[in-house]
Amino acid sequence: MTVGSRKATVEDFRERGFDRIVILSGEGRGIKYSGSGYGNGYMDGLHFAHWVLSNILGDVKYYITIPFSDKNGNLRDNPANGFDGSYWRGWIDGVLNVYDSRRIGFYWSYESYLQATINDPALGVLGVTNNNPKEQYKEAYVQFIEDMSNYTHNHGQELIWIPATGDRGVTYLRKDSFDGIPTIGSYFDYVFVQPNYYQNSICIEYINGYKQTLPYSYEKLVEKIRWVYEELPRNINNPNTTISIEMEADRSILYEYISKTHREENFRESLIEKCGPRFTRECLLRYTYEAKEIAFQYITGQKDVLGKKYEDLAYYFSVDLGAIDEMEGFSRRFGDKYV
Picture 1 (cartoon, rainbow, N blue to C red):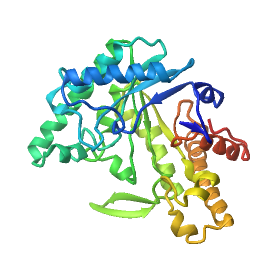
Picture 2: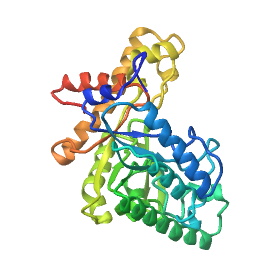
Picture 3: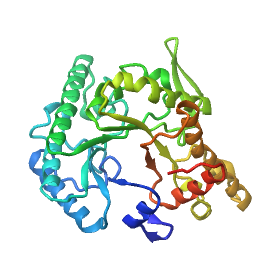
């Protein structure tokens, strides 16, 4: 994590208004994996917790990841086999064996909103294809999440989740077979839904029994925020679960980054198609402005639905806090604070 060209510190996060951080590496691909089972999970968790203790210095509360997959995208264990004896219980125990008063909980790193449904991508990785085994896996998975939640809470730790909804619209999110957030959301202390509007220019809806591809417009963003604000709390039905969204931006908004790399990170528009092959300064500046406009619409969308920003928000900004600084400056031009 950096601030421009230098390594970021805990104080850099605090200065920008963050009161807690999540320590992770995607869904686990960048974290040591010694093999499945409790013992391997314990040693890997112990190793990672010691690394955090030695490298994350300063007074900041944090959540530590529970890695779902390995570097090849394979699951570290099979959730259907239960939480007890699993790699993930071992990981949690290994982490808990390293005392750190700053640690307040765990982050479940598997982002797919399809988990706990019969369309969970993990089913393909595990080789589960028939409908009945899919239903059995779904039931076992929900029990796994419940057990993991109870275990972390019994140890005085919170459990949070930041599910990605991708390019799917609200009509998909209302279908049990395509959205597991209402099914397992109640087991988490915080659920920050990723609108993924910044990343996707199309929105797929399920209308009259057919899949339809539409532009992911500002109106579609507002629909998704409204679903998070009005419908999801009723479906999760747990007053102890705080429900909100994730703010999303990355280095695509930074002129210094795209002028050197000539490529976007995860922004919805291709930089090559927009500005290639010449990549003039004027075009690059226009591109970053449009990216910041899209990122800023998360604020206006909340205001259109809630009348204000959520009090609790998660933030994705890639690996450079400079993206937060850029959005803060952009937002203040319109009388708002980004963080």
